[in-house]
Length: 318
Image (cartoon, rainbow, N blue to C red):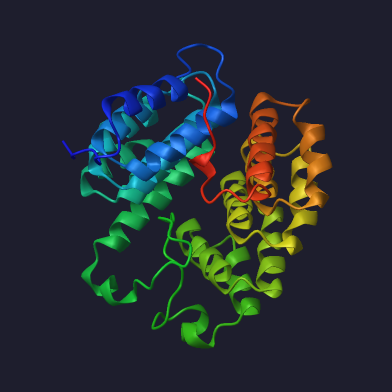
């Protein structure tokens, strides 16, 4: 068991558990998110145990719980994530995130369960398992040890960005690749999703207007999983150049809920006045996961404009 930081007392853990698991039945979802990210910062085995208790009927929260377990990157969370992935009655959005989290932790122990569910009937679960398998293989290949450049966003990504020294399209060295060339690899549906994700994260790391517009072209892709990842990246970039495409995705009632929810959260991260009205509009209509995402995004909007140093810093109601 990992020792808890001195400042986290037993009472502190109990408070966070009560909030995250909504023991009173009255805790706003946004407050549960704040408790989750406080636990993410603690990252002890006790914190992981509490996160594992919080999976409930909210697909949005379940998705975020799995994401955080992957970002903590502790193999202690593997049994929790395995059980979520194996639960075929769970929302596919949550199961997909559990598979992605297994890839983030990158333990060879996860290969059997990922191989099994790489045959799953749900496309997003199946595709996520395929990407996670490729990532674990890449992570454990000694030839790639020198290719792991620092991630400027300090996140564990589903695939490593193309970095210096890697041959890419037509054997062109990555150092010569431009956003225009990376866009070609990004949009080439004949390539594996893992390879295309590598171009996606390379474009994120460049992060200029040309790269943002190239990423936005990915919203025309046939894979909802791929489109959802573009929206997630736009949340990281927080570029005003992505707002028109994100608003279009959120307002598209024919789009997958998984993609629309990620677009809503990205708009909350961008947090300018242009996004406020559309988030308020969709916080009261449409599928539950979209409504809840807009509510959380509005809370993120308030945080971004509050001057708080950390998203979990605000008082949390139990």
